Image (cartoon, rainbow, N blue to C red; front, side, top):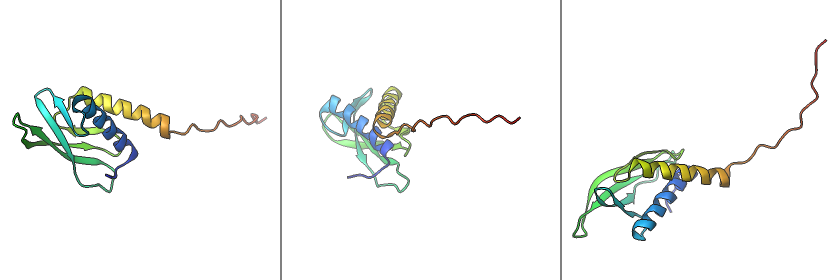
Length: 118
């Protein structure tokens, strides 16, 4: 299991969902200029998720064409082969999921009686 921050993991889950919708796999999708797949890289101590992107040729072979980086706060800074709209959708959905699962609402404090200096 690849370890990264919760927010980066939620964004990766959104990318996997996109791949499942396109190809019924966890790491391949259809882009505007061809078919792509991503391969996870090394784990990062700061919680970001990184890896490489390969473009799949018509004969089934694949070649390195770029990389991806999802920061620990869930911001995608690079994802070759994915459109900016896909980035934004993934980040938006991941943020909404994070807020529903992990955000705690602060307990409401009773208002203290006001003290007025005379």
